[in-house]
Image (cartoon, rainbow, N blue to C red; front, side, top):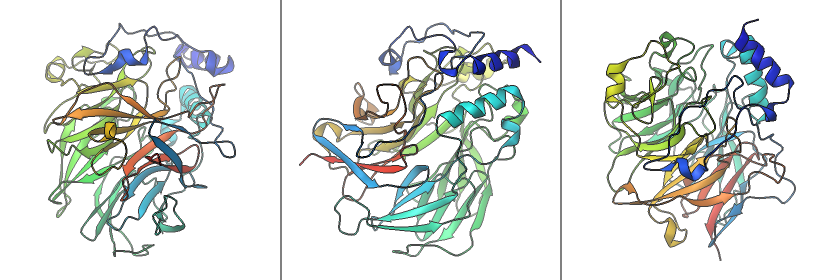
Length: 437
């Protein structure tokens, strides 16, 4: 048995929560336009600090920010991850989880990581469906629930252009015909373009949004590894945002070097494309901050060769100094290992004034940091199209006093009534945040 594999076995046998080093900085130190970036702390045993997923007790719910309240919009879902609001106010929720990817869980390290993700609540089979939730009386609770689409393959992102509904499966971008007001779609999809998938498929989630004029689609494709350890040949077309021509399906790499982009949104003042990104693991509890950033056409953001601009990651071999010299530093850090996935700008919300301009971010929560980070929904204020202040907690309380995960927030979106909807894939709920009465 090779030494790294033996280390992982010892780590797992010795108790996952006891492994690795601890943070020397606060999460706030790794937040903002100029986060602190200490020296890497690569230990023999990687930091493994899982918040075991146990779900909410009867009547339990997160803690909402002052001036707001939270209630369940829908309950009893099956691993709800991503949300999309249709023009008539119906809410689509992707009930989904990772597809089978045997080459990503091969070997001792893969076996251990599979156990880690299972303990964190990510080990259940994917429901592979999109459910429609309807709140016809606008009381903040969905009274109608129907299976909108089924027999998908780990679906995630959704967007509507005219009567064309696009769904990003893990390995294909699909198009369905949508009739306004429909509560289900039974027609067969049309494939727009294949997306990187396969039996490795490390970061499996694919998101999609449309350009303002509807002519282009933008698709996120995460990396097939932490830092290229599976070989850069396995990263073809990955760690990138694709631009897809809606009419032809032709695509190009719009931006690259982005380890695991998830949330995508158009900033309403500048019109710029922004994304929420998960950065790399296993060089210490304080590295590397996840981030939100505007995305430049043709921009390169460092992965795997460097992080947060041009900070070289010495684990990657061979290096590429020419690419590192071009690496763009992100706009705004949102804390190390917070697993910031959801991203929605504040436009159209009916929450208190402090939430009128900025971005809501769903932070799924850490496994590679001690103490935990994330497990909350935050708001980053913007002014003139750019971040302009410290984050504000919107929803907290997803961890109990024993550091168990009662829930884990993922997708965030503003509904037609101006409330903030939050998908909780451990609590199996969609929460709705509204202004206090």
